[in-house]
Image (cartoon, rainbow, N blue to C red; front, side):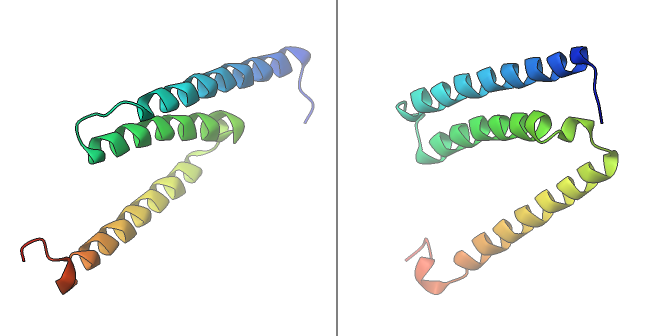
Length: 104
C-alpha cells in the first residue's frame, strides 16, 4: 500500500511524539520508584498505572490498534476479562490454603 509523502510524515510525527511520551514516562517511572506512597500496594498501583499508559501508547500507535476494526477490541476486552478471572481464581485459591490464613 503506497502512501503519500504527507501521510508518511504524519506517521513519523506520531511515532516521534509517542517515543517522547515513552521517554518521559520512563523517567517518571524511575522518579516515582524512589518515592514511598504510604504502602507497598500503593507503590505497585502507581507503577502499574504508568506502565499501563505506556503499554496503551505502544499498542495504539506502534501496533496500529488505533486503526483496527471494532472486532479486535472485542477480543481485547475478552482477553482482559479472562486474565482478570484467572488472577481472581489464583488469589481465591491462595487464601483458601490453610497455612496462608490471616487469623492464626
